[in-house]
Image 1 (cartoon, rainbow over the protein chains, first blue to last red):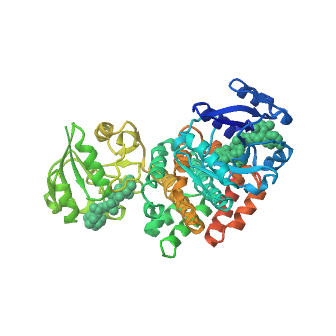
Image 2: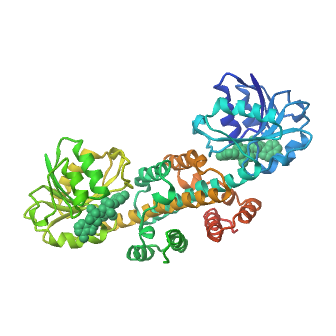
Image 3: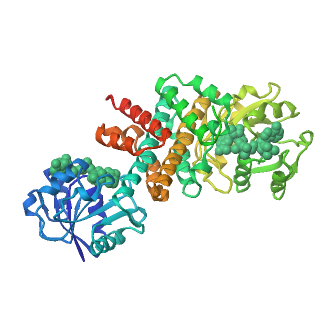
Length: 254
Length: 254
Ligand SMILES: NC(=O)c1ccc[n+]([C@@H]2O[C@H](COP(=O)([O-])OP(=O)(O)OC[C@H]3O[C@@H](n4cnc5c(N)ncnc54)[C@H](OP(=O)(O)O)[C@@H]3O)[C@@H](O)[C@H]2O)c1
Ligand SMILES: NC(=O)c1ccc[n+]([C@@H]2O[C@H](COP(=O)([O-])OP(=O)(O)OC[C@H]3O[C@@H](n4cnc5c(N)ncnc54)[C@H](OP(=O)(O)O)[C@@H]3O)[C@@H](O)[C@H]2O)c1
């Protein structure tokens, strides 16, 4: 049995509690949070505290708090034993206090309140200073996920930036497309199956090979017509730049 | 029974043949193509011809040929009866010869050789000059899809541009993310579950509300660190521009 304390009552904390509770072999012995209302939800299932000095002994302390609160909260912790980890993609392990056994437990997924995700599929990127601690993290991660990956802080930082491109920027493309649809009075939800298929396609096919469209074909006629259709300055500028970037990728100048 | 002739032996033609063959009520009576090798594959299932003057009578003639070949092939067709449609998102119905009964049969999806898609989910955008012809197209489309939408050529053109943003540009984001991963030696396939979830999320949540990440939060520290991590000029420029565009969307200047 691995005893876990979760610190934080946000999105990741809630998803971790949910998945930990469905598995024998993991016991959430306590949740710490400053936000009483959010904390009370956790209190329905496990012991809670809002007093950081009252945190009880555990094997692993998982800090699922905002990136910029990690260092500050960690400095206030007074752990006698156990392994301290955080769940951030971008904060180095060495940011945690040296006096602690330190590690990382980074689930590479986007979590949304009210949406359940299949943890078995989610890569959990782990790191620890010590081999024994690495094994403990691996044991914990392997209970909830089939995809546990050892990774140092530098690699994790790169992966996090790659995730920003693949998630945040992609979502912004959806937004721009949605905005254009609204301007033209066509229903954006007609694009849902296309959007899903575009994402599923690259699970088998490299994005380089999956690329289609006028910029890929260097179809200047269509590119020109599209630019003429776009009245919004921001849409125009991004259309031009992204088409240029696609052209560059496939070796021909626009 | 609706009798159909398919013109073209490419990606869309093949997917249409496959789905039409699985449904009673539709009979593909002939496929026309200029490409003998591709045509012979169709010949295993239905009658074929590469002589445009030998096209046989049908209720609907579906031109699934390259956008820039539509007008030329249509002009060489000598149809005594039946309804002539094409499958393009961007070519107006009026581009087809006036002497024909004309219409549009545009499946809003990205088709890939070897990947089966669920046609029931795919929006089929239809248009016809004549109410009776519209009903015939509606009947055909409804056999294969649960999402049949009447739409004029102008709306379809807008939707097609929106699809370029939501598909082509999104795929390019995947490519850039993949390229960055390769440069940094981290496996891109770890991002697959994230990419899928990002696409699935907006089936329930508007892209505006689904947006996350440093640009959305106006987290200047992370934005600066990310820009420093990006060595590739193209990555840097796009990161800057897309973050700026996200900032603009959420009302704060970078
Ligand atoms: N969201 C994702 O999809 C995702 C995915 C992978 C990793 N992560 C990482 O997981 C961590 C948590 O993210 P999240 O999405 O769960 O964030 P969140 O929903 O915003 O929750 C943040 C939590 O941190 C607490 N907190 C912030 N500042 C604090 C402070 N000074 N003292 C005490 N508690 C404080 C918040 O309490 P209040 O409610 O009182 O503010 C809240 O409970 C971050 O490191 C993030 O990078 C997130
Ligand atoms: N691909 C998609 O995801 C998709 C989705 C929705 C709609 N569409 C539309 O569907 C149509 C077909 O697209 P596709 O993806 O199937 O294209 P494709 O795979 O490239 O196939 C194009 C077909 O047109 C034929 N063709 C081209 N020029 C011709 C000519 N001058 N004379 C006779 N045949 C000619 C090609 O024959 P050869 O093999 O001899 O060149 C080939 O059979 C286009 O209007 C496209 O915009 C495509």
